[in-house]
Image: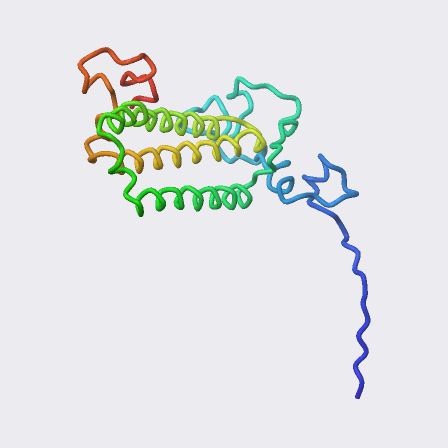
Length: 207
């Protein structure tokens, strides 16, 4: 018995989804970024208005101060959607972990003079709250903005800020005792002097 194998080319019936083809044309395949972004904003068939804001739909362009004829004219040059963003950040996480391991394995923190470590904590620990404020601001953009090309990068940036706050926290714990994190809420609480306005309590999202 013989088996004959033949190659056959199967042409796809369509190159991408109809709501994506509306933006790029139906004669070429779409990238994963385009499929995850273009036309993805819900715009119809809402069952009810939010009880906390009955003047607007659940997703309502009038809620945003930004007004665009085409909400997808904004494109991310990095082509970030969830998968590419997480893979990129994972590689960066590995690099940062390697840096921390390098410092810890060689006991380099113990070789830093106390005055230098204290100064580093004074400068860097309040930035935890700057990053937290950035996280909250971008979460607000993602919640109340309109257009996936606009809101998705805002949520990615919100999580980037959260990651930055976590790494600054880890640095603080490496340089000093856990109490240094509380001191970072306001440098003035430790020094008894007026802190610069950006670092005052309440100026960064209530922290």
